[in-house]
Each structure stands twice: as structure tokens, then as C-alpha cells.
Length: 543
Image (cartoon, rainbow, N blue to C red):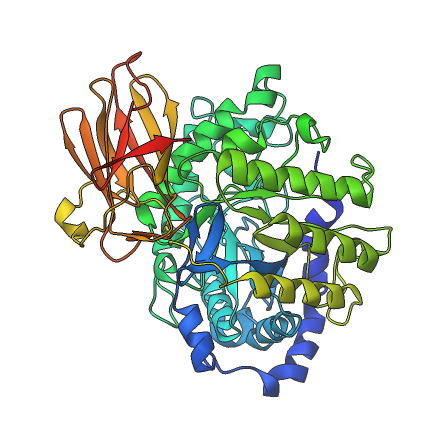
């Protein structure tokens, strides 16, 4: 169910409201920020990529917790006609919005990088990418950097707002709508959907920002990418609703595709976290655990809207729900948790936020982003504008998240990339011994018969860091590694030695973890978990 259908259909309203933006631009033009005018500390921070270290995010080798917000229409600021730099986009309005976000202590902004409509469309027709709209997104990235913020752009929309996957289905001669749009995730039913999505993602990741000269895939202003806003493979079968097999296969394929192009950024799915087991929504073909266990995905997400009529949760029930997600994310999936959307309405919002946010921090949540921060009254249900009383609660939440950041040393783990071809010599660094019994390995096998994935987490149980690491294990059969990320493989027969790459992921902090994954081929029926693991030549336990 599209539980926020009203604000997902605000595009025409936003277009009608565009003229007042001219007045806003005139009011703030003299206050517009000069791009790149950040102080030294900000510049140093913004030049670092956010990574994953075990079940938390990391920045500069230390755990990183953030408080964020969504924007719905930021990419539509401007007339969408005329000269690109002075008319099509409204730079002053973009800067003013980021200035407001910064003043309210927003660290990360989740935002749309999709639209198939004529007005401010990124891809108005199949395979035709609008240079002016992407130029506007170039400026959005630059303004975010100037205001010391990071971005989570979303590649596509499950819902109909701004066209979504319905448009891609229509390009292939298929109808959209729910549940018909499930065909998008089935390669047998819509192979062209897979191709058009990949082509768009490839174009975006490889785009060179015309202001900075930096490709999107190389810009640390990007915190992470979301594959899609709230994907699901719903009501195709009772088994699919529970197991999410088809959506997981799509996530694996698209995740591998993204990582093959961009090895530097984190990647999320963008799902809502619905499920009968959580008492929030139903089983919709997108189970929280299974889908986000994909080795190509770096964090989990969920989008709680507890006061919607179909949810009808109390504050305490909402706390329990969020804690369940955090627990499953950390303890079962083994990844950070991002509350990618959240809000309430028809209640005292400040009171709710005042209870939910502190409990989120106490439960170990890694990042949050409320829905949504608007620059004028577009959405009377969920929109939050500068000066709203609930933002004082949010600023306190941001301070609490900042206070947790940087306190615990972590080991940065950049996202997967297809780096198996790199030679072992690229990881050359002296290794320090790991005392016997002071390490443990968690190995997750995803077996598809003739192909498989392995996801490996090494935990340092000792009191000193392990500087430089090599993990050795042997396959039970004739498995062959075809690609590996976050480590460099050398395989001889059944034995595999996975070593830290050069320049990152090089040490395992005391009590910390490192994670790597790989894809491989195998003979159907012969796969299994390796029987033993050794770290720098000494035996490890398993967990």
C-alpha cells in the first residue's frame, strides 16, 4: 500500500508553486553561498568517504552516527526552461534550502535522483538523459558540499510519483500500477526494464560534475546510493510475499552492477521494513532480513509511519518496532541500520519525536532521516519547514548522534567492487600476529547451484589491533572465486587466501571487525561452508 500517496502526487502542485520560488530567489540572492567556502575542518571531513565497519558506519576510521532529513522536490528548484545556469535551475533557492538544513543540524540528505516527466526530468524517454537536469543535480552536490552535508540519492521510484518504474514498464509495452509493476523485477517478463535501469545507473555514476570535474562515483559528498525508493514484489504468490526471492535476486544483480562501477560508496536497497513479523504492514515480497542480506548491500533501511491508519501504533509500540529492526540489522543481517524515512501526523509531533529519537540513539540506531524538509508549504501532512517546533527536538537528536560519533575506533570497509583481478602484491603490508583463539569468523553462504556468493566477517577478539591481515580457508569442493570485494584473493586449488587491500581495510581494531565478500562458480550440490579459518596463520573460531 502506498501509505503516503498524497505527497507522492505533489508534482503538479510543486510546478504550480514554482513562480513564488522566483521571489524567494530574489530575497536570498545576495546571501547565496560561494561553493566550496567551507572551513578547513569541514573540507577535511568532506574529502573522506563514509564506509561500513561491521554493524556501524565509519568516517575516517571511526564510528559515525548521523541525523538526516529527506527532501522531496529539491531537484525541481527552477523554471525548467531557458538558460541552464540562470533560469533552468534556481541556485539561490538551492543554497537557501541547504543553509536552512545546515542551521537545523541536518548531516545527511536523502533525495530523489529520478524523474521521467517532462518538467525537470532526468530521463524523459528511454535512454535520453537531460543534460540540464543533471547539471542542476551537479549544483545540488556542490551546494551540499559547501554546506558540509552528504547525500543519499535514490536511483528510481517504485511508486508513480515522477513516473517511477511505471514509466520504464510503459517503455517496454507493459502496464504499471500495483501489483502489475512487479513485472519490473522479473527479467523473464521485462528484460528491457533491467537494461534501462542499468543504463541509467551507469550514466549517473559515471557522470562528471561540470562544476567540480569529479565523477559522481568518485565524490565523497555522496554518503550512499539507494537502489530504489521502497521496492517490493508484492502479491505474485504467497511464497514470494514471505520469502522475497525475486526481489532479492534483483537486488543482487543490481547491487553487483553498481559495485562493479562504484567501489567507493555505500549502497542500500531503500525498503520500508514492512512485515507480519514486525506487526507493521504485511508481507509484501520485500522481507527486511533476506533482501538486505545481499552481500552487495551495506546497510539496512526501514520507513516507519506509525500513525497511519493501517499501522495505528502507539509511541511505545513504535519504539519496540524500531528496536526490532535495529536488532535484526545488527545481530542477524550484520549491518548498520538507517531509518531512511520517518514521521507522524495528527499527533503532537514534538512529543513523539522527543520520545522516538532518544530511544533510537539508546538502541544503537546508526542513522535517521525524517520525511521531509520543505522550503515552503507543499505537504501539510508530513512537510516540515524551518522554524517548526519539532526541529528543536531534531537538533537535540543531531547533537546526540554527533556525540556518539568518533568515540570508537573502527576499521573502514569500503563497499564491494569487482577487484578479484587485482594481484595479491597490491595488499603488501606487514602483518601482525593474531594470537590463537583471539579471532572468530562468520561465513554466510548464498548458494544458487552453479554460482554462489560468500559474505565473510572477521572479528578480532583480542586486546590489540591486527595490522595487516590474511584469512585462509579451503572450499569443500571445486568452487572457484570469480570476483572479490574489500579483499584481494589468491586461490590455489581449494585453498583461498584473502588479504587486506592496499590503502584501506588494512587493520582490525581490538574488538572490531572487517568484512569482505565474493562471487564464485561451483558444481551444483557441492557447496558448503569452509570447515576452518586461520588469520595470519593462526586458527580462528566461528560464530
